[in-house]
Amino acid sequence: MDIEHVRSRFIKHFDGTTGAVYASPGRINLIGEHTDYNGGFVFPGAIDKGMIAEIKPNGTKTVKAYSIDLKDYVEFGLNEEDAPRASWARYIFGVCREMIKRGVDVQGFNTAFAGDVPLGAGMSSSAALESTYAYALNDLFGDNKIDKFELAKVGQATEHNYCGVNCGIMDQFASVFGKKGKLIRLDCRSLEYQYYPFEPVGYRLVLVDSVVKHELASSAYNKRRQSCEAVVAAIQARHPHVEFLRDCTMEMLQEVKAEVSEEDYKRAEYVIEEIQRVLDVCDALEKGDYETVGQKMYETHHGMSKLYEVSCEELDFLNDIAFDCGVTGSRVMGGGFGGCTINLVKDELYSTFIETAKEEFKKKFGRSPKIYDVVISDGARRLE
Image (cartoon, rainbow, N blue to C red; front, top):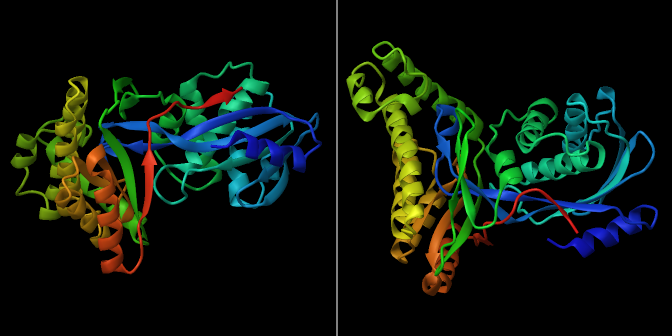
């Protein structure tokens, strides 16, 4: 992320003076997919790619915002009826409105921002943008009176209320709470969290982007939620304390096998196993056992592909290549139906793996995948 580039654009597009600079990262999720809405755990970390914004109060009630990457300029007021049309500006407007709702006296400001989180690769560029502005407005106008948890909720509420996306809290949480060299186990039911060491000496974390976006993702996502809820309802009849699949064991699932569809059974089997895998990975990291971490990643990919059925041909192909190249761990990252695989690769295998993945993928699908190296880094902050 290039501070000087953002500063030079800020000076050029406004009055020649400078403001304060803030940054927030995108995120990866090492393991724990489709566990959030089942009351389970997720295991994200902030990465060394994100958003940088320069911001300076301008003494008016108007926000003047410039997107450096899109070369687009928008002005808007701070009242509900002032919502801008440009979709990127709605994120900033939404954060302003959510901070105002929480008692922060947000005033007009000038801002320019840019990012190096790849769009559409599942690293949460929108959460990085929301967290940057939530953190900045709290610092500039709120005397830092809003705590980090509430800042993450500001980003989530922005998605819900101004951008039409009914997301969970993980992306914003990781962007605000990230710490260099640490992953965060977040309990999606209680919102309790714990940091775990992630400093894989001799390994690299690399995302291989299939550059595939499948259109059926949202309807398929809803269908899978319904499967999980159907199984919970069947188990609840025998075990009234059960609220989510998080509360279920494989034995309980077995009890209702004859009462649920084969498809619903498979979906629930994946989720129950995945919730346990997150806990197993946490134990492995505390021992520095990255081989077990990798094995669990492969198990997750198999579950997402064969039981939850949210993978696709391109992602399965990349996962197979990783396995054949001796990569320690590999799996589809995110909701599925496209996007990236996340790979834990030994340093000495890195070049061979990347070359093979690019070559074989292009041979089969006629285009090259994109490669992103990521390092686990700090969350939202003011830059000096």
